[in-house]
Image (cartoon, rainbow, N blue to C red; front, side, top):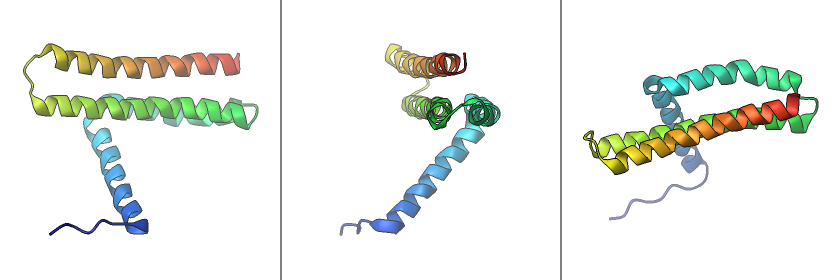
Length: 119
């Protein structure tokens, strides 16, 4: 027997629960996520104050959120790689290094964007 698919509001509520569980897991298990959330909590109000118009505020805030999104994806990738096996494998190393590079690039984007908007 096939399980009936959820639709509408019940599906959205269930998906929200999964998302909340993911955020709680990231906070509990990922030091980098916690550090980036603290930076977000500090920088987001500054972005709202320092941005001269809606577009600048949006750019400053969304650039910070890109770091969070990238960190969540990197953490998910690392969890999957670790689930497969903890022994060294060059492809596992490459996957983790690529995820880390994505986070680094997103942080560089924040620095460049904030510098261009605010200077």
